[in-house]
Every structure is written in structure tokens, then in C-alpha cells.
Length: 442
Ligand SMILES: [Zn+2]
Ligand SMILES: [Zn+2]
Image (cartoon, rainbow, N blue to C red):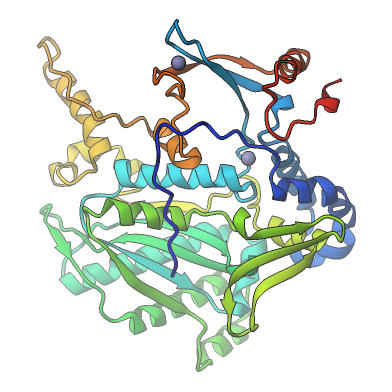
């Protein structure tokens, strides 16, 4: 498995303003044709009545980073400098927009590492289902959460059985619908506490050595769930259970020690990553073709895939989840109901991540001794957003690139005539944002 780690930050570089990226150009040039042909060419395989949802995400994505949609005005706080610039808005179109997805993956990784994962060993599991069942994950929204729950309860039952006492575990399970080269390959990435707490509050570590039996159990339970939901017949269930190669697999090769923040963040980013990487994409606009580079696939004997632009859009937009569907689920001690009570369990609070301890240490003492003067705990600068922006853009936009003073957002402008006025002014003084066509401002 390859894990991509964010590039190290260099705080004083110049803020890199974005212009229209390759993927946006593909969508701008071909999305309308794709939408027009959807029902006839793609609906049967990719699902009926999905085009409305896809169109909404796509139109926001096409406008992502477009200055004409609105800007934030950011100014240096040093009165002798007052350097300023404008930044466009983002679409937050996760699962489609590479830059917004990357930001979200970083935010997720930061949350897991600083606010959620206990300072105890975790295992990363990857659960794969057989081809015959994968197709159901396109259409049946119940399955995302129910299979996640099944995975967690399987592992917890194993822990309790192995240690001979009831064990409270914890897990984050992320559904990922894609494989290499935009193929439909639904699977689950799970970060699972390697063991759990017994009723006396002791942490019992339970390593799993035998994945063969876990796979066997996963197979039986999953087939049982599909049967219960009426998705397959009893006859088909029996056939599936008889197959010599079950198609189910469990990989648990990655161990994460409690203190290994880098590995935890990298893995969390991997589990929440976007289906596509911009660096691997080439667009031939004259021929309306898209070329995508991938790792060498020995089965298909290729490391590139060439698409007609419209087919490429179909392949990519199949991963946009239906409305209101969550791909990440939290269980046991990580479920939000449980997490809200961590401060009542000293054995859990003792191994809580630093971000959680900092915010709750303050709260707890304020409640206990309301009239006493308190020393505010020295808090490391953990402004998650600022750190994320550094990681994404490799600069800190809140530090002035001229004098090093703090920069602040002084206005947010969304009124179209006002935005045009600002952009025309920037063009006039020779500071037009990259990729902006001045003729579009008239
Ligand atoms: Zn975006
Ligand atoms: Zn300055």
C-alpha cells in the first residue's frame, strides 16, 4: 500500500494563488454533453436519477477558486506595510474537487490525530468484498453504515472472546468506493484500537494473529446481512458460501503505535483521499481525450488509461456519494455519544490525545473551582486551519510575505458588481490573479 504524505511546510514562501486546473477545464468543456447523454448512456450502470446530484456538485466545482464568484480580502496588520491580497472561495465539493478534497483529508487527519485517537496502539484493516456483492454498494445506501458496524462488532466480539471478559473497543471505519484508475472497487479502511478496556478500566491489548478466521466470519456475516436486507436470494447466498475463493479479504498489516503521529496522520489522509490526483492527469482538449497515469497494473498490463472526455467524467462522478450519505463512521469509544463522556472515565481521559486534553483540562477545572484564579494552560499553537493551509499551499497565508506580521481577513465580498470592480482594478494595476481572463469582466 502506498501512503502519500503531505509535503513539508515552508512558512515564508509566497502564497500560490490558484488558476483553473486541468480537471476544471475538462468539466467546463464537456460536462454539459455528459449531462445530456447521462440517461441514455450511463444511467443503467451508474444509477438512475443521479444526474441532478452530480450536476450540483459539478457546477460548484467548475466555479471553485474562480475570483468572479467572490473573494476574501486579506491584509497585513502592520500599519507600515498593509500589504494585501484577495483569495477566491472554495467549492467544498468533496469526492470531486482535488484541492478541496485534499484540504478535507488533511482536516480529517488532524482531527483524528489531535482530537480522537487515544494514545494506544491501533491497527489499520482493509476489508474487501467479492465482485458479486460490490455492485450493491452503488444503489443501497444502507450498506455503507451497516457493513461498517458489522466490521466493528466482529472485531469487538473477537476481543471479548479472546480475553474472556467484555471489552469496550473503538474504531473509525471509512468507506472508499474507488480503486486504481477510477475503477469501482468499494472497500473499507478501518483504524481499530488493538484491544480495549475491560469493566475495571484496564486496557487489554489483543493482537489478531489469525486473519483467516476473521475473513471467514466477515464472509458469513456479510452474506447474512445481504440476505437479511433482501438483496440476494438464499440460493445465491449458499453459492457464495461454497466458493473456494471467497473474494472476501482482510488486510491488517499496518500497526500504528500510540505516539506515531506522522504515521497516523498519513494513514488517515490516505483513508479520506480523493479518487483522483491532478498530477497524474493529462487533457488533450483538441481530441477531447483524457489520459490518466496509474501504478502499473500487471493484470491489465498497463500504467495509463485513455478516456473519451465524457466517459472520463462518468468514471469520476460515480464516486460522488448520494445526498446525506456519510462515508466515515465512528464506533465504541469514538462514537460521538461516548466521546462526550470521556471526561467521566479517568482511564480513557488519561490516554486522550493532546488536543482533547487541552480543551477539556480547562473546562474541568473551571467547573470544579469556579472562584479561583486559574493559570491558563500553555497551549501550543494548534490552530488547525492555519496549519492545514500551510500544508496545502505550502505557505502560511496568515503571515505577511513582505514583513512577517500577521494577516487577517478584513472583508468578504460576494456582490458581483463589487467583485468585478475589484478584479478590474487589479488588472489595471498589473496584479491580476493568474488564470483570469480580463475580457470576462466587462
Ligand atoms: Zn473545490
Ligand atoms: Zn506586512
